[in-house]
Length: 471
Image (cartoon, rainbow, N blue to C red; front, side, top):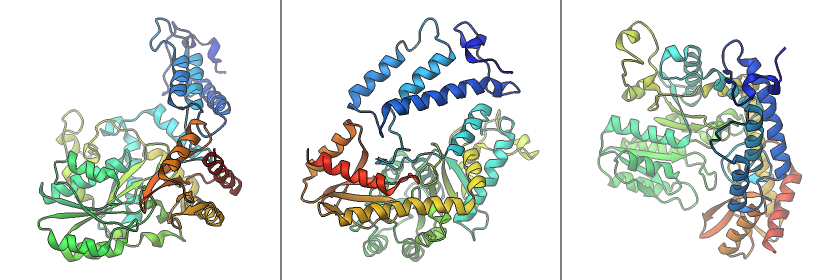
């Protein structure tokens, strides 16, 4: 029988805390996990809504009170420290599991994925050498190659790298293109592209990207053709499958045709929209994705994973050769020749968590049908919200949603009023809505990623917006 936290030596300030791994790891974790779960419940119950009321000063004061002395002379013990700080963090969280927390591409993670992440943390393999992560490195290879094959089904040897998210994946895509085409590589992106494309070009010492207009939220093909005709030298065209502001998807097949005509490399940032591949009814929206040389995917968006769960997929694993790197204490040549997997070329990072475990568990548990159901459910929820806005004489809808993003605003409201209403909802803890500029106006942005959101939740969200607008 395992001891309760209050009776174990390590729960007292002078005890030596046990480790999470090994034969005794489960017994050590079990009471602590119970404490964490209680604290998560208590913090969320005290908060009551999608985020704490009072704004930054109130939240900071609450955390300061809970934290007290950052490094006390005498510790308070495991149970007290866990309960106090986890409760404070849960109370002060913007809870993506609340149906009115709908501002960002910040998904509520599935419970099974969080449970798998606990196992990953407890085992703590580091994927920078095989002798630190034998099973984790094998799992990563199997899952990433299967995922890459979903994206590039006819590629000669599809492969994918695990990243921290869309930003790192986009950075790696530009890095690989630079190493293949040279430092004069010119990136061409739409005005709708994620900010990480321009930032990656700057970090890599590449020329400032050429921006193509996207007047309707997607790349203007005529303008793109003109740009590609005028430019000289190696080119990389980046398209987006699921823009941050509107969830729009660029015309991938047509862009791929232009890239073929002009001999340009082609990258697709599908961090948001990539999981449409799992939906039998919506995967056609990604037609042409398989023609990209590199594809960004981010499963802590429409994949319901805890951060981080990004990937960069390529149709041929040899395209990753530029990342090869040797450190004698991690991947000496004789070990590699003897058959030990070389992991350093799988990331620009050295120490890496086994983030693929939670993805593998989710895929095994839900299968393609279950994942597709979740994708379809949240997309359908976005259509329901669009219907409510369309029928409301006091609200304007920007456009029908492609994915799960809905832009709307009060009719005749000024941009200043929209911004003030959003902040009012935030500081009172009523709702978390994003903001986006389109058609010369500021819009509320609802990014609906919670598959448990109900029509009643949507009605309440609209009522909250209207109530705050009239104050």
